[in-house]
Picture 1 (cartoon, helix red, strand yellow):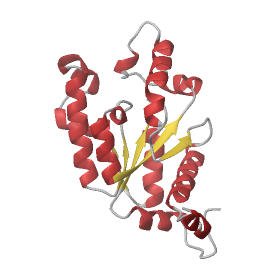
Picture 2 (tube, helix red, strand yellow):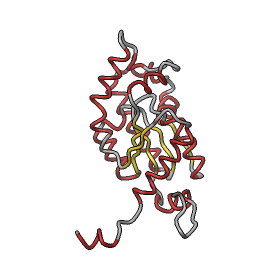
Picture 3 (cartoon, one colour):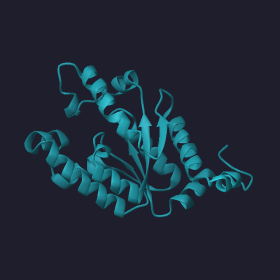
Length: 199
């Protein structure tokens, strides 16, 4: 499935199809954006960037501190600026924070300079993963699972606007990376000749 009759590897096909565009991973915390993104970038021979790490470097503060000192609206402003700057340096693989794609202007920037991939994960998978790591300011609540459920309800419809959707399952990261590559390959595939004629 990864190589058509031409024998061209899927990685080479995708690099050509991307051109100067970047692959932008979106989804909730725990969806695997950073881990999958790093491996995806390695497969494609692209640079990997994590927007949250870049924001912390630009601000000289951790994300929980930015939230606490300046509030979420100010954080989202900075996030949009950082994502715009990173996209101008493409092509690369960019992992974004869970709320980034919710902002319409950030989504528009991603649409102009990238291809968005939603890593979609079920609640139980997300909770298992986020419990392994702290540093999640949005989950500093009495009932983190209820908070996550609320985030799923609020954000999934918007994440559904992404160009490509891939299920982030409890399988090896390399399997999810392969799923992303194949989904992108289908996304870039030119429509069959009869489909064009029918329009």
